[in-house]
Image (cartoon, rainbow, N blue to C red; front, side, top):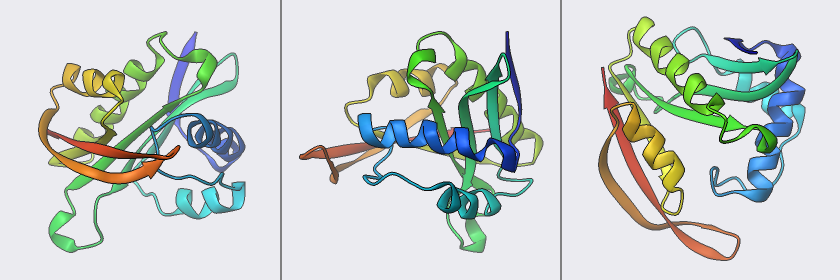
Length: 162
């Protein structure tokens, strides 16, 4: 059975492995070089009560993680966050991402965020559909704004307002 909880430093190795899998195999992130646990620790420390990192575990194994990241360091954006959700390859299409996204959106509401932004590679229909299922609205496309696996990629912007 899957359990969702706040991430701890002890989860960083698994979080890094899941993220590196996404870097190497998908356009879910536009990072192109694998991260070290030390680099991910710097990222992790940059999160706070308003920008949580959650993990999903099954049988004690971290199989997915999600975060609400600061959208901008400008004060006017304090109530806006960007959502990220990553699921270990062997656990995809089992509802884990949906459960984790639901919990992460609820966390944002609980901490008083006003809006959540999602940036999604144009080819990632699964993530677009997932966001739509939670009430995210399409707000625009940044054309050919990223390059990965030798292709220029569009990025869709989606927004949820609480």
